[in-house]
Image (cartoon, rainbow, N blue to C red):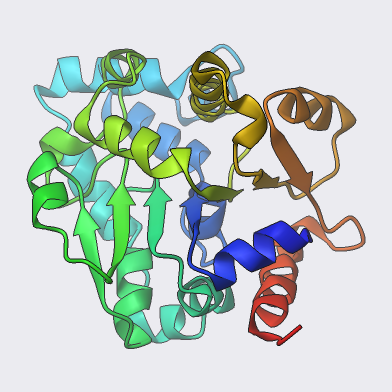
Length: 271
């Protein structure tokens, strides 16, 4: 589990970074479903979703070129990726995230399910999507930072190839905020596939920032939760200063909830 992780969460000195795996615990469609929908709207075979040569970023770029904007796709995602409140109220993973009381939650998810979970469980929060939101954020209130955009603002959504390439500079207002927030805090990454090149790039850039500072040995320990043990990923991430956590005795679909249950209990206990 990591005593340092438990301590920093208890002291509210840790950041949570939540990916698509968190949303999928409440039944959100997979990326293959999104590819099928885009293919169908563009007049292609739905089997495009299982073609290993298809990059969904490029398909989304093509969709925007053909449709004139990402708006129709955003509307479809908004309708299909919204979970009913009664179901979300019972979603244990989301409830545990609220209970852990991170001061800042970063997410690359577009959906509103984290925000809705905070509201349903009576926890105050502020949503941050733009530089203006950063300026207006209130002290002492949990920040939910939508790093890849939000359904309320089409222009904020990072989904097509150009969007991702533009973000590789790591210089957008939210990227700069993340670098500043991350420098002095422990980070816990959950819900990510380490095959996602974008998240690997972010982890690498974070490591390079510390390496360039000359104070790498003083960097707070950060963690990545993975559904399955993988010695290759563990070795690479360890090189970048990240410790991999797993629940090897759990089914993958249950692992995240089990991990968060144990973490919440450890934070709540008085040593």
